[in-house]
Image (cartoon, rainbow, N blue to C red; front, top):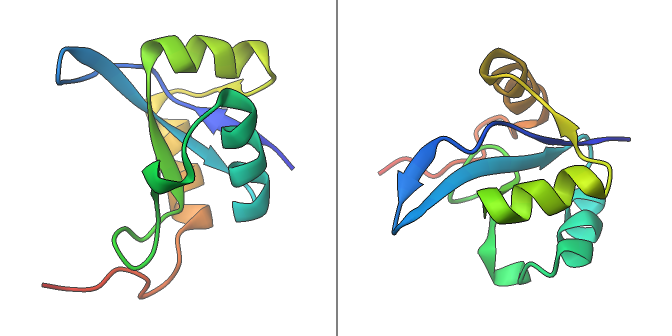
Amino acid sequence: MAVYVDAAIWKWAGHRWCHLLADDTDELHRFAAKLGLKRSSYQGPPKTSAPHYDITGFERDRAVRLGAIECSREEIVAIFRRVRVPNGKIQP
């Protein structure tokens, strides 16, 4: 199983952000714990359709050093589609 990060290009709250995804949700949580992320920052069903964490550029650098695979925008979208939970997001 693998963990993936895209480029930290999303600006918000004075930081650049990116997405941390994995082939398996348990692996995602284990990796996030290694990064020191709080479980409460997890985003997944029912709030979003794909299990992931939003992480800062600083956390991204650490994630890559710990073995996360760097992905292009196109690659991370393909991974998002692969790991998403069908009908997992609550519609407003």
